Image (cartoon, rainbow, N blue to C red; front, top):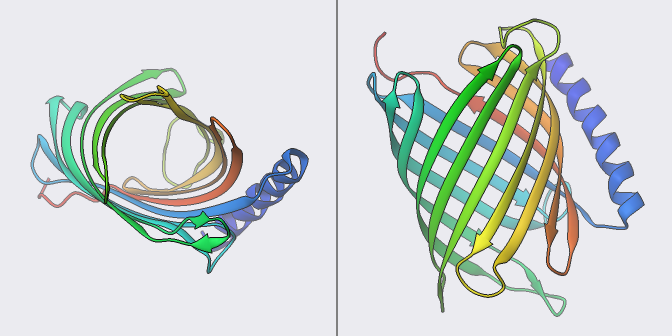
Length: 225
């Protein structure tokens, strides 16, 4: 598994570096953990940590911690969730590091569809953002697709491709906040765990920046099946 992950990370880092050089952008790195663990047949606990850097390591851009409780409206699908996020940001302002803290409440709905090999997901999220000196609201829509490569299904020890596009719309002016386009290769470790290494390009009103992303996904249930 380590060899597979190393190859994935090396390939994506190489592609990301080329893309960033071509676009003359700074290349950041995001290291991410996502947990989605069943508490009961209908309830799930979401837990997430993202460590975002301006470079590969050491220059913290943002630390994001999210958690929430979700409920499946149908069996293993159509999940509604209420969550909370803590976000510590350290941006550069006029060449100097600043520190901002944000508390965020969010509501989301995720629905999944399957067409042959194609595993499609839609996520709709509403955010209430409590910043240090401001309050803002934002809507996000993400469409994502996982496609198994080495097997017909997302089975253990299989490689897969992952892509998504997410748009952020603000309730204030300007309405367009940002758009994220992502592509990655992933490896299914077992039925409850997988890893991905990918490249994401984030487009904002006045800037365009690339990010290397390495993510670990944990779906081990807490309830007894």
